[in-house]
Image 1 (cartoon, one colour):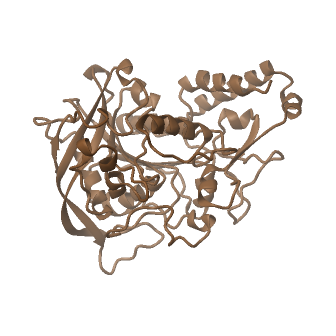
Image 2 (spheres, rainbow, N blue to C red):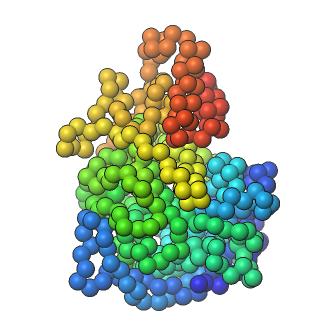
Length: 456
């Protein structure tokens, strides 16, 4: 296990990169950053083994290298408010800098611990031509960090999980501040979900740093164990295939683990995973949400607020992309995984999105809205057709999907007036709460948003 130092203070900016946009102290939380360093192992495929579609992959330790990285920790200041569960999120680096969900109300109102783990080279070094990694953003604070290769990311992630888990050495610098940790959940979204897919299939059978896994917006394929000096870069010229081909599932998740696995996908990943869908079991939950996409207007707006604060360059072409955020489903997944591990109560099974027979084509209603799947209130009481259908043929457009608002005449014909619309919307939100896919706090928040977008 690595050596921990901190809390980290100072630096050029005086705050951790991509820290929460919430006033976490008002929720009774401490926000602290720690460094962890030591030697990490890389892994390789066991010679003669088959890394096939079934996901039963065999890996073994390969090489060892020194590393130093950071983890951003959120924990209840009052031990009585801690629910015993820590979520360790694999920070996503696809943008050329780190993104992670540190604004979840379920975490801060529910008493969880949250650890945002920097485990990939891009997070530290950034991507050319405008490097926005930790070391360039604040060399005073992060200049000593080093991850030699993403080959070591899996073990670094394990070491961070162990450093905040029940068996950690809490007599030294303890990121969890002495809290009584019961369970540690690994969570990752998009590219990070792909890395967790490989972790589940190849590392988890012999490494018990985590008690459960949440893979969000997961495209149904793992990432390589060995990439050498290669940096994760969605813009690499090596990608000559179409976005549709790139976003296609390739392997199952192994089904022999003791740790439960929870998949939370939008409409886009449901398409990608069509050929590798797996049934719900006593250790697997697979959610698909109709009308959503990989990113949304709301998630991009929240990301821009963070980027403006931290003076980052971000994509600005969000016109017309999907307008139903999938974030509320992540909060529900946190809640259900916590109950699954701490109380033995499995998450509710949800209907899947409907597809035409033996194809990756979604069945849609007369408006163009996907049938089946989880039905958020923006889908059940729509003011627009939101989908994963891209506006352009490039990869970023595929991630954004589309939103086509109804005309005023269509809205009036459908609902009559604003009061009738809001009645149906709120009723749909409460039904989603009853189904277990929304937390109760979302009813008021989503209804307020619906009031604001009603066409005048």
